[in-house]
Amino acid sequence: MEAILKVKSSEFTDELVGKIKHILTNMKDAELTISISEYKDMGNLRDESKKEYFNRLDKGIKNFENGNVITFDGDSFESFSKHLLNEE
Image 1 (spheres, one colour):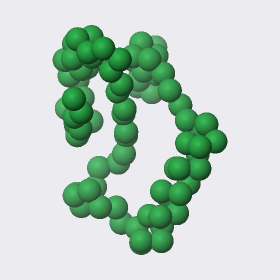
Image 2 (image 1 turned 90 degrees about the vertical axis):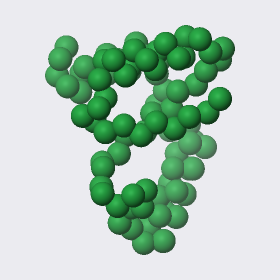
Image 3 (image 1 turned 180 degrees about the vertical axis):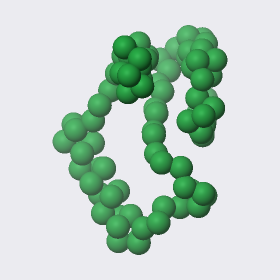
Image 4 (image 1 turned 45 degrees about the vertical axis):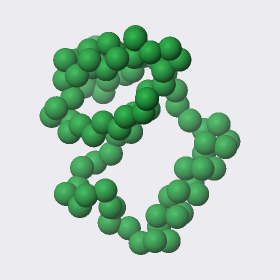
């Protein structure tokens, strides 16, 4: 199963996190990918040229190949989220 959830920051609630946790606990070897971006009312397109897009894509690929990535489990994500919201 694969799903893409697009959620506005105002809709990202503890209830939604709980539902996601519930889905993941019922799956074997599940993986969750979270991407955070600024919302622009332009659909899925960014305000960038084709060259800028491919440069950004190449940079992301190089970062991934060099191991320059951040991974964490659900508890660490929750702790980091609270840190960002200054709730710790």
